[in-house]
Length: 186
Ligand SMILES: [Fe+2]
Ligand SMILES: [Fe+2]
Image 1 (cartoon, rainbow, N blue to C red):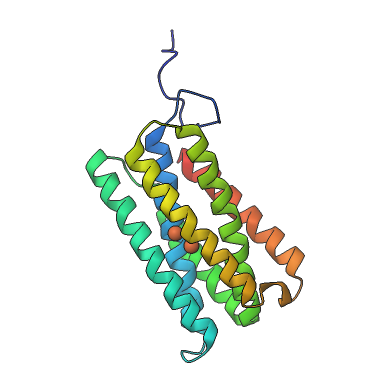
Image 2 (cartoon, protein in one colour; image 1 turned 120 degrees about the vertical axis):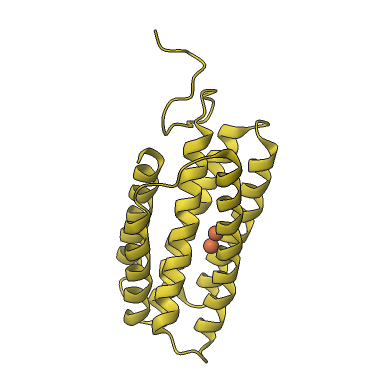
């Protein structure tokens, strides 16, 4: 018989006490890794002197810090990374490069969409964790605040002026949700 208290793989629905914290850390590390790759792709395209490149450089440095912290927690807790890391390596970079090739505003719309989903994702994790694991929850809360800053900065920088903004952000949010779901499990 299955242990009722055992974590359910890839699962942390609000109110569910059987939280799989290894999967939580795995998907968070994957997301931060993807973020560093998106910004690397954008910076490969954006003109170095542009305000957009300046903003992206700032956001990328925060993503590096988020990623480093999750890497550290994974090492301490002996959690393996997602097997899909090579896919996020290529896919994240491509998403960043393609949006930046469309326009600076499209690059901002990409951040707008990604951070909207990451904010929702971190919020869901914080609700699921409650008072469990204050170490992990503290990091998530701090990173969530910075992701919301990124989203707002991208909106201020003209994300909504991107071509086909509703369709573009809808598509990117869908990609993020799919990436989150598979990284929880694989
Ligand atoms: Fe981040
Ligand atoms: Fe971010």
